[in-house]
Image 1 (cartoon, rainbow, N blue to C red):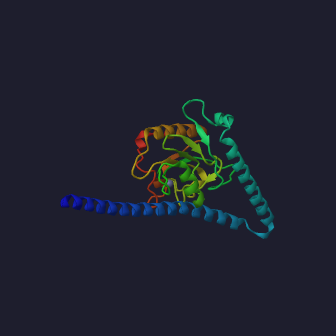
Image 2 (image 1 turned 90 degrees about the vertical axis):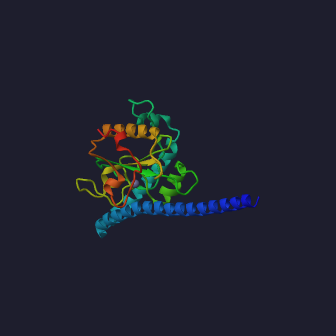
Image 3 (image 1 turned 135 degrees about the vertical axis):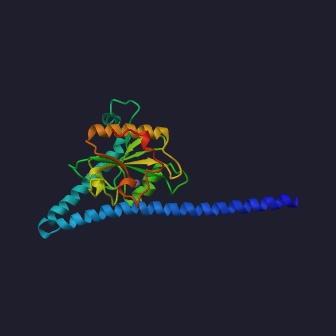
Length: 257
Ligand SMILES: [Zn+2]
């Protein structure tokens, strides 16, 4: 009987140690992920500030003010559209490619994490990984979007849920803040300016699943059809040393051509 209680005692003690340790790891991961997101935003903001500074001389202050007002207006419209589009089946139909019936892009447009652009050219696609580090379910999309991206002021253009559903958060034409300090192989920097960002929901301990690989391929095919794409790369390819995502991604499972 004595031995039995000793075993129970040590069992509880070891479990306690394990959870205390695990909690610390999660805390560290959470801190890191939030820092990571903040980094993406800082860069984008500094680029924006630099651009604004360059434009800011007394003669065109009026113009800048007008521009800012216009941006606000457009963000409001964007927010309205985002609300409307949730149940707007006609828009969904229009945005979904005809060729593949099981591929659908759901609009879930956000009001942060991007700057408005009209005529940018897109020739690069960057893949990322995201997971929910602030709530209990690592795959919870609402937490990832509302509790991680939103406070950090960042966003990808698309996110692929663990179920393989594709959501559009930022329209292609706008510059989403997803890449941070980065450079593509031909030497161009500020990759946000000419790229589309796709986030795949998976933790560093798991791979994307088959439903996600299927949707990634559908989305890539759809985008390659729309734009002349030069690069399809991972975040780690354009920000090596700083970024390691997309995590556990098997490039052999997708067709880049
Ligand atoms: Zn990334």
